[in-house]
Image (cartoon, rainbow, N blue to C red; front, side, top):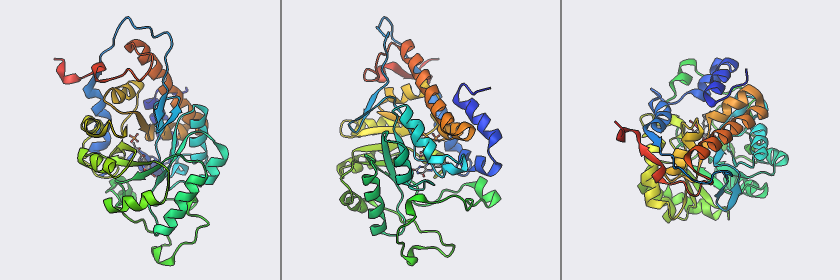
Length: 354
Ligand code: FNR
């Protein structure tokens, strides 16, 4: 039976994936409290439908840093997708392009930026983790620009690994056949390598943002923001967009669910930068709740990896279809013909209703 919603895809993927791959993808840090609460947070909000609106046509398109995409659901950077399916990032970008949806490619992708650019001219951004040294990273950023990526997403919440106990229990290491496509063919200083041959990541601080900006003319998005003070600092330093995110609960456990962080961040910087959100999104109604609370778009991570595990590109595309259909039906029920009219008057905290 073909899954009809994201939870069914999750269950199907659980049966297909090896226990190691399942644990790597599904898991989070320590007690995985943030993993579960990211999703539960959506259950603490309810929708307020409005009546007598003409919703005979419905438009889900949104403009993200000046580029119009057909739905407000973005494929988050996740890696290594090869653990879920051999099509990996090729499936990610092809499925996104079919829907004119945005795909964000991970620095740690198996397939290089050039390989994915070759099979898709759909909307794509590139997510940066910093390896080796600055000159190496400058080269990678230049490649991202040259291969048609239209924004640089700097992930700020994963400079140091989280304590992922599922991985510790089995001493999991990534299989050898998984490449770091974006680092292949580059001249890497031997000093940047660890004894096992892998390449060291380096952490950034606020003062490094100026350097990142000097490497590119692309707009910069910071991913992994939970604090309104950090959001304000980022905007002051010229950042165009922010992803409110705790890395899907994979970094610090007990982090506040991303949805709970969203209103304060939108309040502080929503007029000056685009604010996106990820973590725990499983339903079209989750997407509408996030947008009503001020997000411009949402990113999905595990939801599309489940689709990938089950059926490669077809599965990712079907996951996007499911979101599209759920959002469409919810818009019709809510009295929304487009997403611009969605605002906080369409939601209320569930606890308001006794
Ligand atoms: C991630 N995430 C992530 N983020 C990032 O910036 N670069 C990366 O390479 C990865 N890799 C990665 C692998 C896997 C297996 C997962 C599940 C997640 C985090 C990702 O972009 C996103 O923030 C979360 O996945 C959002 O939470 P949900 O949708 O998975 O609940």
